[in-house]
Amino acid sequence: MKKNIVILGSTGSIGQNTLSIIQKYRNNYNIKLLSTNKNLNKIIQQAKRFKVKNVIINDLNKFKFAKKKYKKLKINFFNSFNIIDKILKKKEIFYSMISVVGIDGLQPSIQLIKKSKNIAIVNKESIICGWNLIKKELNKSKTNFIPIDSEHFSIYSLIEKNNHDLIDKIFITASGGPFLNKSIKKIKRRDALNHPNWKMGQKISIDSSTMMNKVFEVIEAKKLFNLKYKKISILTHPQSYVHAIVKFNNALIKILMHEPDMKIPIYNSLYPNVKNKIKSQNLNLTILNNLQLKKIDYKKFPLTRLLNNLRDKDSLYETAIVTINDFFVLKYLKNEIEYHEMINSIYKYCNLREFLNLRKISPKNVKDIYRLRDYVSLKLISLGV
Image (cartoon, rainbow, N blue to C red):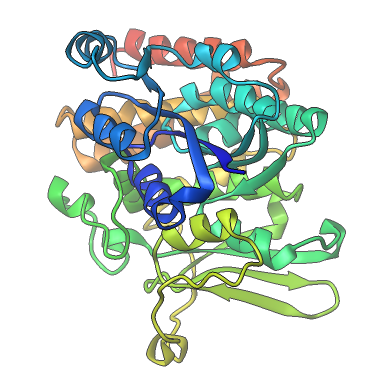
């Protein structure tokens, strides 16, 4: 019997990698739903290749165009994630991959938890802003959760079913991006987007260059593995070969390494403990003998200091910093501000007293998070930044 699959964000790099892995064993799967923001050509190709009947296109103009141009295809086009509850049955889905970008991925994540036996989430914003809501639904629906970011999948694999109280320290590695060993005084946009190890979208590439992505990954690790922030550290590691190190209270230290290829955690989330072999390179002894692990340079990457603002209790402050970062990264990508202005602005507004006070308030529902996101965006606009 075929296993039902859902991929939200199927036209992005994670979605395409997931489909490429499924392609090899496509007779074992039935893809029930794909989604894209606006990459119409790509999602039509995917729907045809995998005979997908349901497609969500978030961009309204692209959605209208698709309904008109492809009306002869036997595809149901939708313009909202809200349709998930109508077209999918409870626990009908074996595996759901959530790889959409932004806080808007939170609501469909919660919806798909109810429909899925296994759910893989790459959407940082959903976990950072709404983990308490996600966790509540996971427990209620008894759905298996699999983190896919290479760092978190590595920690997940190293810990397995060990009691989290046995963990003494977790180290998340960071390549350091394009500026680890370079000055960041005069930055060209093309250099900021040129990550040395990973092929990523523009937004995540900029976050990697500023190390804001590591701030987010520390927040994720804290929430996913129920740890305190003091138990999590960042180490720079330019080769991106080691992805996580876990030190246990019994003095054992476990390290997980693999090539910088997102297909590896995706493959292992789909095929845990199976004999199928994925193509990979031999152990790289050159890298292994020269890991270059170092403590983070807070002066060079000042945004990592924002971790000092965080409290161990889930709060709406996490939504504020995600929104502030998104706001100024977008301005930078539009060439409206310089690189150093982007960093200074993110740091400045994440330290506004009004936003710091949000650390006292926990999100009660998805609407709380969406309302705050909209408020913070409007507040920044009103300040004329």
